[in-house]
Length: 293
Image 1 (cartoon, one colour):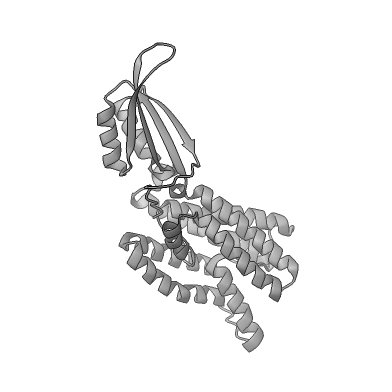
Image 2 (cartoon, rainbow, N blue to C red):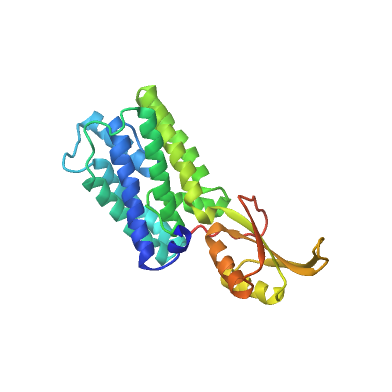
């Protein structure tokens, strides 16, 4: 259901706004009260904010200075997105970045943690943050920050967004370890790792699926329709059932989980009785374009 809703229309916009709220809520409710740091660009901005406070005593009481820095550092990343990812993605990026910052300002930070146990706060906060960020990615958008750079590098190098995010978070945690007590670095790193794991699971364009379709209908017409609608190549051949001895047409296509609904819709229209198998999480090499946005 969520997969279908993330494709088009105003429902997609509402889902992105709800997801940015969830991401902001996770940080303000579970991470900030524990005096921990977020990952990504916001975590870096939080680190700069702390450094400015230590060195210059610079503090903005009415709004988190890290949110202001987050908005300023998003400017060059938005320009990068404009040049490499298209106007539609940039429009979604601006919507999510602005709404995320507004939610970060409006959602109150409790004086006492909602969950007293720091480990539990990291796990719950990381799950909610990863789900929020991942759904926005599944809507072909981004909450902004360094995730824009991750999408760009992921398309260029082939690594998942979550893997690149984890490497960056480890480097950021090393800075936390140098500047703060070990507990802050450990729990902040745990939050970042959990966020990255759930972000990858929700980012449907990042999950490769192999679909095998067995049908007695016209396989060439079905293959053409799949290729036209998804832009993915299809291999098809004739097989024979071992039990009945009847001939059956077999089609095989590799695509992302985001594109899976399109294939299922085509098959349901052309042959409601087709037998379909799906294998998720494949590692694909060669001519397989990565469409992360």
